[in-house]
Image (cartoon, rainbow, N blue to C red; front, side, top):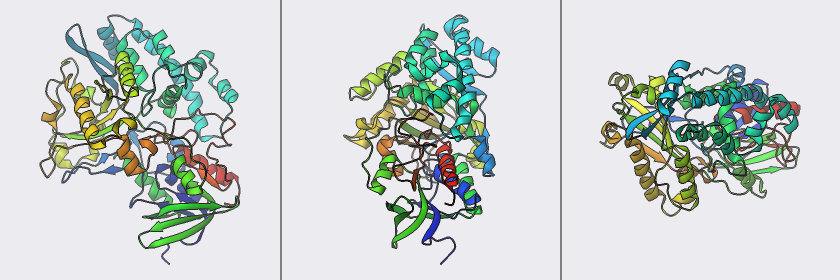
Length: 522
């Protein structure tokens, strides 16, 4: 038997070779455990991959997940990863038409520039002062909460003591984020920019009583202890390639084309039945770590599945021959697109889009945000494309729940893409279509993915990029010590659906590995 093929018994079997599974494999293998990773597809990486989506074009794009904030430096350091991120000097640009003229809000490039941009948009100092106070508060919270993500789960009271700020706790953990946004900010555009971080992949109103928008907001502002969202150098696949290499170098066996179909456990050990093109096999282990959704876990173990999950986003990848010119001539497109370019994301626009989608209709003004990876990291493009000035654009649309696509996924995708790009074109001095590159077959270099596409391609339940609603980062009666435990002592959940999962973080993978190592010989 080849040393790279599965054998019958391991200390740990990991189902799924996404980034969290690879993190767990790296930690366990480095600790001397024998590890098998079973991956259904012919490659590792899950949603954190880089691909060349356009025929004959040397552009390697982060096809699904695309920015990094929640990955602790601790994981990069512990696993010796050859991977780095690059910060963005511009945070965001949000175009708008005011009094019949194009303008907008550029955040970044230094405090003075940002203050001037707020004054230019709002006519005074008030909004910028409120902005500074609000994000000063979230920055303090980030510094206190982010280090806890790779520790055993604190209780709610312990986390509150750690935050040590009653106002911040109320704003983030107890009342809908819309209350804080409306109390602190007066300008509709500024309110919308703040709210967007509560809605990424999360279909909710600003005042949703479930507070799932607050949980989304929290994870978007605590990353790295700063809330900064950085560009993965080489694309997102550079991270998962580095993780796979680190796991293999430590001795883990990674078997692609191996689909787990069943997990049987008596509480002390477990057996994973897997299927390949050649037939079925079985691997036994003291621990099985499932890097898949809670729904997939339930299917594997035969347990009652959780309630359905639903994604609510449109992902669009593009390659341009040049960046389009803006109607707002006061802003350089190379700055506007370097950060997050907000489209149709005023506060009232976001509320209207949510209301329409909740009523079963596509938003007439679909909100979305764009950024250009290649401005910060041109290494994802071939040298010829860089020399000719080509650029990438990544678009993420909001408030488009999976239910809207069920009648005809292909037709609704095209309708939504057309409406989304029309919202962008309204702020451009030239149509985006005039800037799109062509592939080797003469087709425009643009691809769109709906929640139903993500469910089909990646197994994301309902296309939900977090596998389910994000959780609070503290323990309750349903969690274990690390937030990865299941009803079966020998089976752990190390995917995005674990407590403190979601985003490209590696946190559930780290925590599941720690749970195994704490359990002793595994």
